[in-house]
Length: 179
Image (cartoon, rainbow, N blue to C red; front, top):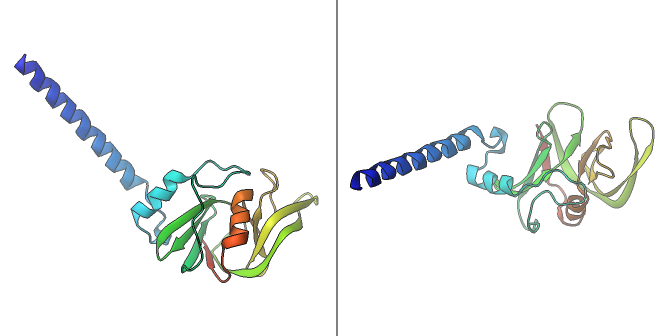
């Protein structure tokens, strides 16, 4: 009986150790983008809160953070369809976003032009109404995506709830760097 308990204990400990190795390997492989220069813990917390891309829901589960009184920067990654809002190298919020800009790195500033609605033309020449937009740079807007799959050039499309939150809370002159 004593021998069976020892074998079962060794087996249990070895299973736990194997699981720990796999969890740590997953953490090594799945790292934040190097350009963010943020801690793994800060990035992982917000990555775990992310939802699947949906037009009518916020990008993260939980309440929106307060943005006033912070030194904010934004980093966008078109291949990931994500925008990271950072405060002193800590992730504050991650936005699911469709970035419809020309390829290459861009450095833009959030402007003071904002509005409840704006009209664009898609690639087929149809007019599209977008809501809760704010200007970024010379010819670019962050706005709510009117319908899933509508592609509008020179825009960064986010969900309707995220657009309302940004429209009401994102301060002017926040730097947006697109990688």
